[in-house]
Length: 463
Image (cartoon, rainbow, N blue to C red; front, side):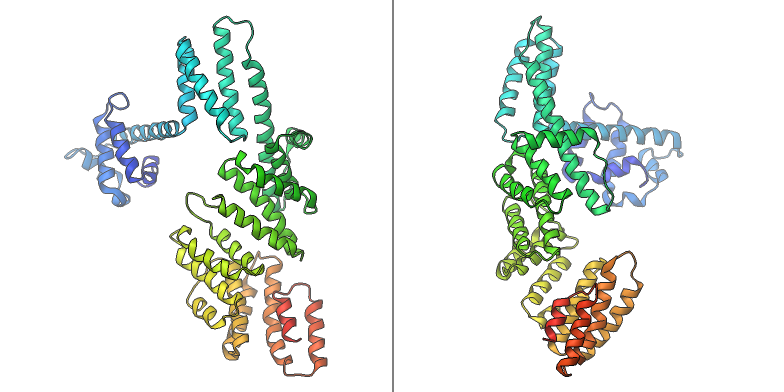
């Protein structure tokens, strides 16, 4: 039963949607089959327990006393699936304010109801113009409305139509902005996959149009692409910063978040190159996006974003702000990871504040499945043990970490970097008790090794 499309759709329904769908099925216009209504009631009554039943058990509940008929059951099941799909489509249409009203305009126009068409089209046009968004979706809706206006003018026998110019201009802007948006998305994916994305000739043309034009929305997307494409595009980054601070309201929340993240990722790359002024830039941009409400997705703050903001706050000396942030946004974490992610980031806070006993208290009893989080935890534990002089615990951790790291695969240079950290820690502890020449020799060894996590801390201990 749980492998059927019907069951899979049913499982996505909220309690409110189940109540609405029951009314949907009760309408003779939408459904005239009692067996379909009966099947839904059985599924609804069982709720979460429905996965325990097979088709025969459900069939018996639907038709008491009748022997199982697979063909008939599948027929009813498919019919219910079809009604569920129709319900979802209706919900999408009713929740899309523009499309709901636009389809009414189209229906009026097709039926020759000119006056109600023109009244409704005019109202919808005014709402569209007054909407502050000027993204691709705005121009698509403008294009659709202009097309209907043009079709109405032709049907009325008018020999000219102002809607022709409107629809051509809207079409041009829609196509340009969509190509720019997907060019930026493709570039972001290329950065993660290390594989270049073929943008095609139209995207390249859109990039040139945007750069030479005066549309802030198009220019913002073009600069987003540029900073994602070229890690040396400092001038483009400065322009992008100014644009998102003045004109990010031209885009939807999701689109504006993507543009902010393009600027933030540019800063992170610079930070990783050791250019520390971009660390502050990234933190400021994160705070701006947070204050504008752009970072929450359905009320949820991604755990990676939660952690990135915490780390950047500490790196820029805003430790008090970081603690307030962690408490304020704890409840915006996904419930299934809330406590673990919160404790991990509070541990980072204590670690950054050199409160090592509190760090150990939080980290000792938490397990993490993510490899890079696990590596970070081991790093914090090692440094905390070192700073507190817990040498036996440190020795045990170093050996277990070496074994763990040797088993790791597909972690690139990170494996070597953390393995070198664990190899150098005992040597640093020993060298601290030796003469200056021995310490200097180890410093040179650490500095000349290509990949070493916590290099500055290790060298600092030999200072």
